[in-house]
Length: 162
Image (cartoon, rainbow, N blue to C red; front, top):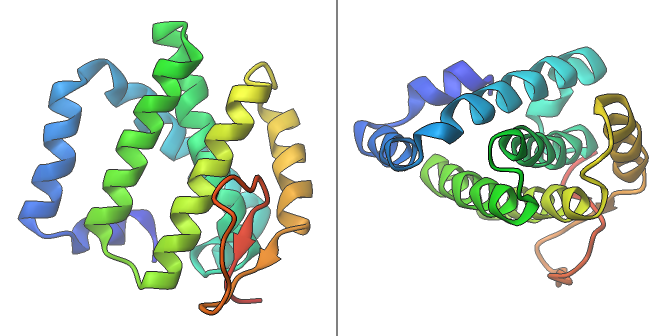
């Protein structure tokens, strides 16, 4: 599902929850929107519509999105932990209000976390370097099934379908 279609599909209550978070943290609005736009543009170029499915391209997108939210937020706050906390707060809320299928939600939460973990270790990478790194990581992503147990601390991207 495309991002605008996803936003339009949200109920008033879901949109309200996202809006409240932004109203409490107005300085994060622009960095988050910019990161989201950059992520979608990059993924459209690299993967076409494949990143809207539950494969390796989607795993890349979620990790990249979180990395970019952290990186863009850090320009304002100059603190990697504050930036990471914001990305976690916003993307966790987004995943909760969009109410994906259980397995998709597990995958998205995990890959979002991987993006933030990579940021904390490699926040100085430029856009091309992080793209290259996450592309390599997505190529090595592990297929995840409902019967699998997930190592919470794993920095390996996961996907559901080929």
